[in-house]
Image (tube, rainbow, N blue to C red; front, side, top):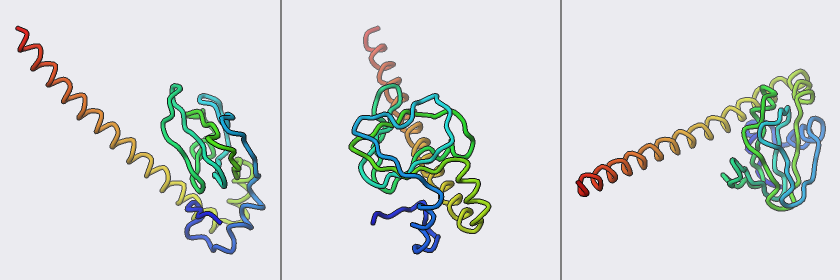
Amino acid sequence: MIQLNIFEGINPLEHQVILDKYFTRRTFNANEEIVKKGDSGDEMFIILEGTAKVKVSGRVYIDLNPGEVFGEICLIDSGARNASIYAGTTAILSVLNRNAFDLFLRERPQDASIFLLNIVRVLVSRLRKAVETVRDTEIGLKQMQNLLVKLSLKSV
């Protein structure tokens, strides 16, 4: 069985019980769209088997592998999707919708609070990576700007 970090801190004997009761299982064929950027949503996905591709502006931004999650923001706020996600290969996903999540919170508050903390950890990790990317982009732009200034001074 794959490691599901989203359940870290919850009794391992309860992982399958939680998956069976609150999640549904869906299969997507390779290259099939799972979620579309801009669409509203209220589901979070866990990749059980296969891979998925996060696409922004038609470009693959990141590949997701078994055990990884996506859609967690929409589970919390039911807002618009930030990216389109496609199955990279045939993918089996475990899906948690808002109604089942609310039931999970009511019936198993201790496990649900651990689960929520793990969602926060996923979000913080992604935020840190985004900040690094912005910082690296700014450094690269600054270097390019300096180079252009030097080149323009040479041509004067």
